[in-house]
Amino acid sequence: MITIENLTKCYGAATVVDGVSMQIPRNSLTVIVGTSGSGKSTLLRMVNRLVEPTSGRVLLDGSDTRAQPPHLLRRRIGYAIQGHGLFPHRTVAENIATVPRLLGWDAARIAARVSELLEAFALEPAAFAGQFPHQLSGGQQQRVGVARALAAGPQLLLMDEPFGALDPIIRAKAQDDLLDIRRRFGTTIVLVTHDMDEAFRLGDHVAVMSGGRMLQYGPPAELLTRPADPLVSRMTGLADRAMRLLSLSTAGEAALPGTVDGPEVAASATLRDVLSELMWRGVDAARVTDANGTARGHLTVAAILARGRP
Image (cartoon, rainbow, N blue to C red; front, top):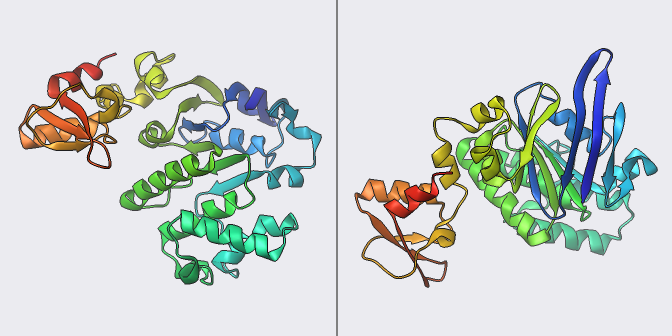
């Protein structure tokens, strides 16, 4: 559990973060979203004390982060940024091993952890461990950057606009990778972005910031159906909020009992994607199956549309 209590940061007369409080559950993925200058990145950096708060405090499992030196705190918290920040003169393996070496791990333990993470990110250790960052694609560099942040098994991973420099196709793959890694390692993740679609795709909870203040913090569906501020309504999208709401549920979750004639859709597909497929094919219903082909029921256009209303 991460507890943020009345966190404030001032630079002279300017208040960049203004009395923010929130609780982030263990093993959750929380997204902080806001426009440029909203204070979201400063808030994130106060968690690991890259920026020292003017007032307020951060608790990790009940312990005040001010109770230990910042450099020791940061070894417990993974940190990944846009541009990846890889050391250009170090190999992939050496980059990933940075924090374990600082912690004094032995060579065999480091090598095993590097191999585990490379395999987790679909980077064959024999092919990639000895390469240098300039030999990698942008997407591969991004994966290595996240692997480095996870190397010492941190209880918390902070990510500041990690996918902002990637093209849309690679970005979508990177988001899927992050969700897979989160499920595999059970890491608590706090991610900053300016992209509301990304926030809704990734977040169990979403925090909306503006002018240094927290406007609303809650599950994505709550922000859509019960916005606490007009700016939250505008940011979540007045014109397409029904489609955003459909993107939060899967076919498997909404499947009706029984079977029908019609195309087959994956249980993992969002209702938004299923509706798009049915409209494209000009049919009214689809069969829902899971990854191994087992029938999970069916969906109709009418049933999907009903889920797009608050």
